[in-house]
Structure formats: structure tokens, C-alpha cells
Length: 152
Image 1 (tube, rainbow, N blue to C red):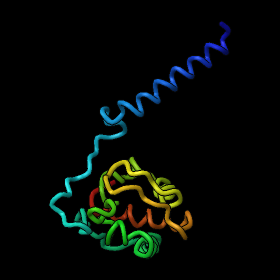
Image 2 (cartoon, one colour):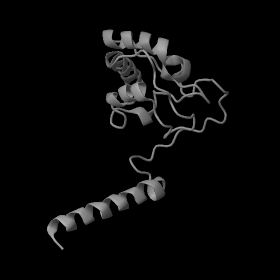
Image 3 (cartoon, one colour):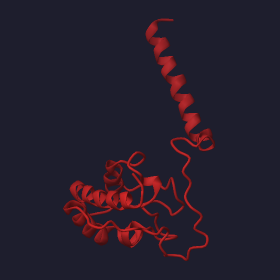
Image 4 (cartoon, rainbow, N blue to C red):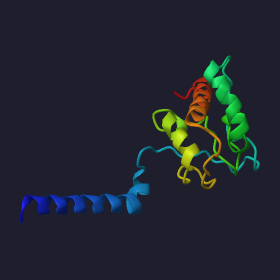
């Protein structure tokens, strides 16, 4: 057997193993993090999921992001990104900390939508009418809310 054939075989074996691990056993291994969403069974449908402490002031970029958030995101993600039970998760939550969900994750979520993977609220549709710059300002707003709530 030549080296190229061996290399191709190894790639298939490794790829197959990864696929099995991803689709069969990954959930048992808490891949990526061990964060679990809070129990929301005691919260009324549509009510905020978390209490959000507001920062004393917002940067200019975050203030613009707040306006965009209120126009495009708050209907689902709630006032001040506190979430709405049964509708959409809070973005002021450790699951969305910068080390786990980068600002680019917010951009991709708005552009493409997101398959439900942390919460049981269903898939997020893509959001029409937002530029990458708009979403980056929304991310700046969310990050300032997160920092005011001890999420770095």
C-alpha cells in the first residue's frame, strides 16, 4: 500500500470516528461546556428568565445597539436581553459569554438563524434587515449588559 492510500484511509477512519462521536456520544460527554440552562418551570410564559442589572451608562456603540436590539431582537429575547420564557433565551447568561459565543456568533445567528442547541425554545430564524455592523452594535450592547451582570 502506498503512502497516499494510507493517508486517505486514515482520514476516513478519523472522520468516521469523529462523526460517530458527534452524533452518538457527544451529548454524554458535555462537549464544549457543562452549562445547563436554568429551570424555568416556575416562570410564567413570556416573562423574563433572568434579572438584568443595567450598567450606569452605555458607550455610544452600545446605545446604538440597544436601539437596534429593541427594534429587532427584544420581541423574542426580551427587554434588556433578559429572555422570555417559552419564547427565546436571555443573552445576559453565562452561555453567551464572549469565550463561548464570540461577537461573530451573534452576526452569524442573525444572518443565518440558529438551530436550537442550548435551550428548548426551538430554532432561531434569520433576522432580515440587519447589516453585520448593526449586529456588532447589538453585540456591544449585550456585552455591556453582560459585564454589568458579572459575565465576562
